[in-house]
Image (cartoon, rainbow, N blue to C red; front, side):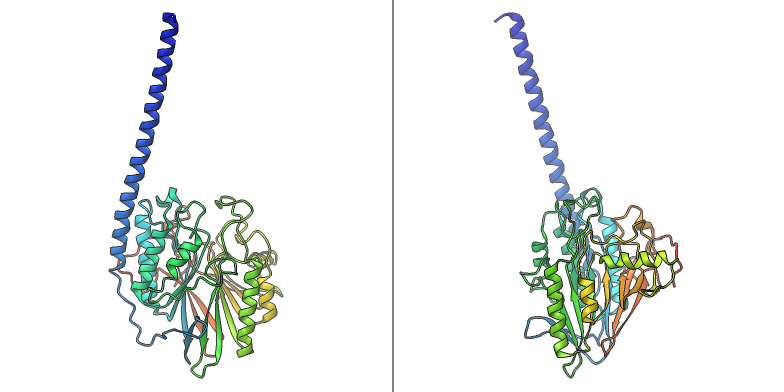
Length: 413
């Protein structure tokens, strides 16, 4: 081998060594950063768990305690009004990037639940937000654990429906595993059920409201509205799913069973992603110059999301048609579109956006105050209901830690 060939061979070997060292260095750096992130997130998680333990249990001597019936479903038995507090899109990130905003969310939830003293709290999805470039983690279990710990600390009966962010395609734990966290029998106040195995989704369940004579007056129906569809597994194209047909069949079965006990029974439905009819109703309202039509009656609130205003499922389902056919459902409550809180009565059913809590998901939303709050639902002894949207920035909501300064575009009491 000539001297020139030897030099060429040596140069190639040197390049390979350098490249190998670069790869090893890169791998070590990635491993070190990953380990550091895990350690930091664990420390911050424990700090937030300590913060949760600072909140006091809600004092409500007149609270109605739910009991399990022979079918393993919860029942509220009362002759007075049943107060339900709905909260949505809490968006606990659970990582180092969302640490401070997570604390604000926990603070807001605790303040509103404590002040309202409801008989039941319903969380309509997106409790977790494991989006790494905003939260600093893929671990959606830490977010769920923070929500569970807070609600158990407040000691008010509560349940959830899942949203698209609770179990992302890239998050560590899928819907079934997160569902088991909420369905854990050691939880003393959570009324969540994973639902039938032969029905799509996790968390399809009902809670009954009866009077003291045993008459069924209200069915509270909770349904999983799923996540993404159409190949959009990461949700970057906003292709959201719809309620599936076997869920509609399950809803029909539950309502018909209730109507056999009381033909006049009423029902309320809680989901995360709005039904297509939310968009249909709002578009009809807009096309009529924001005035009522034969089908649409404005009740309250406003739309602040950008066109197309309502980010509903991409396909069609017949849940709404089944609701109108069976005639028991008075209202549907959803979350998902954080800056919408409008209520439109469409073909006799109130389509409601709950006030959201979000400090994290929308860019700049932590500085806004219009959307942040809760929805108070009151079930009357005859099964009828009322609802009121409440903004968080009122004196009656007195959090353990001070509220932040925010801007408003709408008037609030």
